Length: 158
Ligand SMILES: Cc1cc2nc3c(=O)[nH]c(=O)nc-3n(C[C@H](O)[C@H](O)[C@H](O)COP(=O)(O)O)c2cc1C
Image (spheres, rainbow, N blue to C red):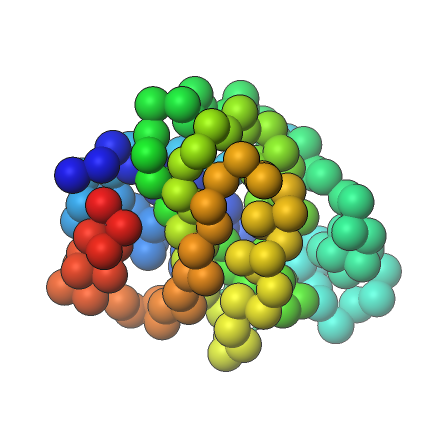
C-alpha cells in the first residue's frame, strides 16, 4: 500500500463528506483546503455575474489564499484531490493548493462532485500547474457514493 493523502475543498459540504468517507476507507491522511475568506451563500451564486465565485472562476490566474499551510506532500505517493465542479472545472482554490505544494513525483488522482457535469479539463489543468506529478483523469462521484465503491476505485492507485 502506498502512503496517501486525501486533499479536498468543499463549499457546501458534499465533497467533504465524500472525502472523509474515502480517507477512512483507505486509511489515508486528510487535508481540507479552507479559504482564508469563507464563501458566503451570495459568493456561491453562479447565476450572478458579479458574485465572488463567478469573478474568481472567470480569471484563470485567480488564487484565493488558503487559511492553513499545505501539508508536507513529500511523504505521500498518491494524493486524491477532491472538489466540487465549478464552471466545468476545478475551483480556483484547488489551483492555490496545487501551486503551494512541493511535489516530487507524486500521483494525483482528482475526484469531484457536481450538479451533473463531469470534471472537464480539471486533470489537464492540474497537470499544467504541477508538472512534477502524474495526474490521472479522475472520477466524478455521486454524493451518496459509499466506501464499497470508493475503496476498490482508490486501491487501483495504491
Ligand atoms: C460557483 C459554482 C459553480 C458550479 N458549477 C457547476 C458546473 O459547472 N457543473 C455542475 O454540474 N455543477 C456545478 N456546481 C454545483 C456543484 O458542483 C455541486 O453542487 C457540488 O456537489 C457542491 O459540492 P460541495 O458541497 O462540496 O461544495 C457549481 C456550484 C457552484 C457553487
